Image 1 (cartoon, one colour):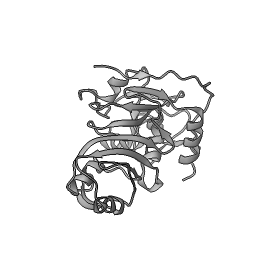
Image 2 (cartoon, rainbow, N blue to C red):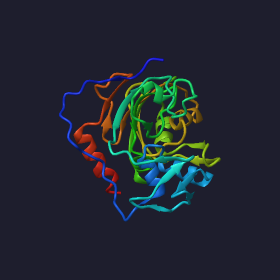
Image 3 (cartoon, rainbow, N blue to C red):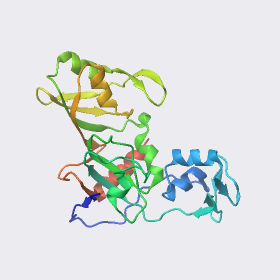
Length: 262
């Protein structure tokens, strides 16, 4: 498969790190996330499955890891990664946002990097646009949690002319089936800007599975093309499809401020 291409950057990188609140020891799910093995949520699942040990004893949710403790997953010791990376990719259509290497066209093999990274959230296979990737597992939930209200902006084309009724319903909330909760649910209010007869931009603060496509389908429309153009303050401006770049110093500073102000 083809691989992502790095966009040449001309700015001077500083030693900027995303800060996380320090306590006496750290929770075991954070420790696993800091190792780059997986996100905190996935770490909880691994702990519950019984394959995680702390000092050779079965780990439990809520345990804390001190300086000289040893954490193992399936018998293999892990340690936090000191060098964290934060990447913006303008994902092309056809790439799957999963770390499961057996899935064809997965994003890990597409990136083809030495670092162990994983995507922050998802962008469905049929869509293109901005997605963030990192080996900092502690940052993932802070960006994705709905209650934090982080914005994601999309440019959408549909198959027929927009009506005022469509715009009103999209902005006020559409009832769709939530695949995670297995219940029908009205989407959160959002902001929509019509660009022309069939194109609009929409800003969401939640991320239900294939949400925009399913919202439009519920209103009798079909998505022709869907591109994510912004996550919080980070955009894919001047980033060609299929290219990636490391976040700039300014982006990292603003990201650090945003996730630690909640």
